[in-house]
Image 1 (cartoon, rainbow, N blue to C red):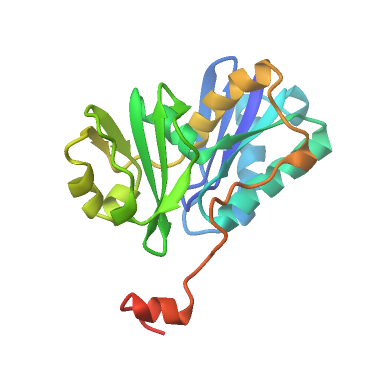
Image 2: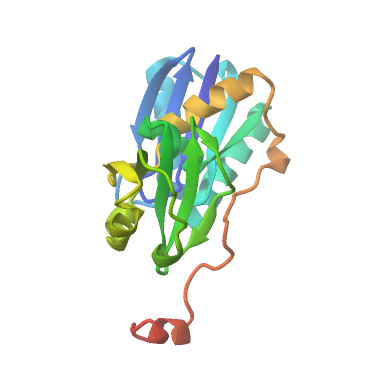
Length: 225
């Protein structure tokens, strides 16, 4: 089975080609918008692997949460390619893919959501224990058990999280970021069992509906107008 996966949830965009369990992953060029680099990167990587769109069995994309703009780019490109080449589409949760990539059994995923907040998910054996949510570092629910792995750039953005989670977290991966390879690894078995959507039904998962703080909110947090 051949699958193309896309992740532009953050500034570190990437794509991956899954070929019967083998993965080829490529990063989007830094400093340039994903909307400019994504399609050329996809075309070049397909050529590199000797594949064409006709050889693909499906597409997958990181549906969110993450950067609002990035999520729209990934969803739009995946939808366009799925329509054009009549391919099934598999939306994958960004934090679900991060939990898988961490290699942990009991995982807390903490992705910087900006505006003083984090996207938060808790997973056991790569299965979500609750819906992904957004919260401030000080209101993050703390597990009452030990042995967890915590990952994601929220740990670096908000050092207080290490203090609050110190009693329950055994392993830390603050460097772990969303990646298309993990999206492909989750999507491949779903595609194989027919768990996919039509392109028209694919939507980003924003979790929250606010892109930026208002002037008054920035001032209240000690920022500038």
